[in-house]
Length: 156
Image (cartoon, rainbow, N blue to C red; front, side):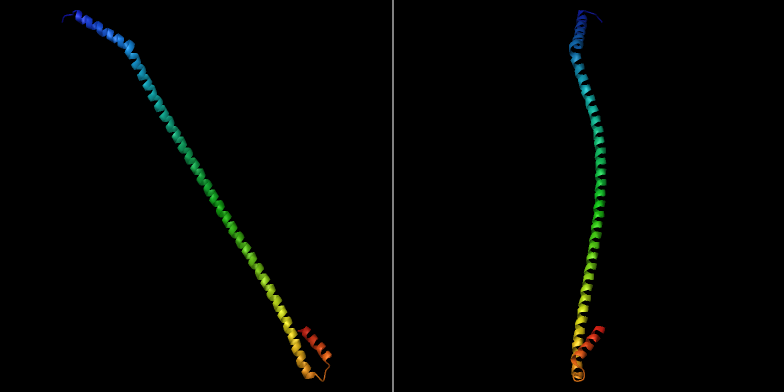
């Protein structure tokens, strides 16, 4: 193999090309690759932070949902308890009102019964006086007879 000037010229041209590439072409490409690598790393870190934030948010949402369900259960329990209390109060009020009306009706019945008895006594006295007057009109004075029947009515 002959070593001639062409080979030396090609070696010098290749060396200049390598030096030129290393000096002017390679640094921007390396910088672009480092920037791209940094962006990818930042993106992965952001994705990981986002996943952690998502996990925390889901955990917090579950906790809030659990608290809301618990509060809803407590509210329902209180509402049921209050509803039962209102029903019991209404029953008690209705029972008291019924008892009051029954007592009032019994008092009215008793009053009417007493009035009827008094009216019957008066009618009995009147009938007795009338009958006795006709039978005994000539034998006893009307005033003595009336006094006697009044005493009898009082005894009844």
